[in-house]
Image (cartoon, rainbow, N blue to C red; front, side, top):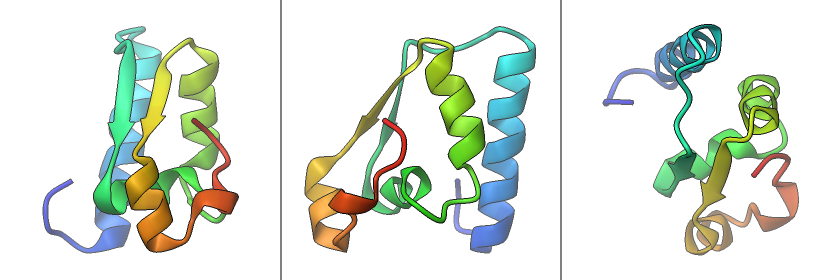
Length: 79
């Protein structure tokens, strides 16, 4: 989200996802590409929130080209 510090970006996204869950205003799908694929892998601070979103029947779509580029294919935990 934007070009701020990574920690701030993650905090903003976590808040956004939490509010979506609380308001039951969920999209059909969320797409992760470029650096966004780093949010769905082992070690991401958003794994629990994203797992909660996924359990609410939101499809998490991850760019396999981006995963391969960053060498993260084996570390995917949600999606």
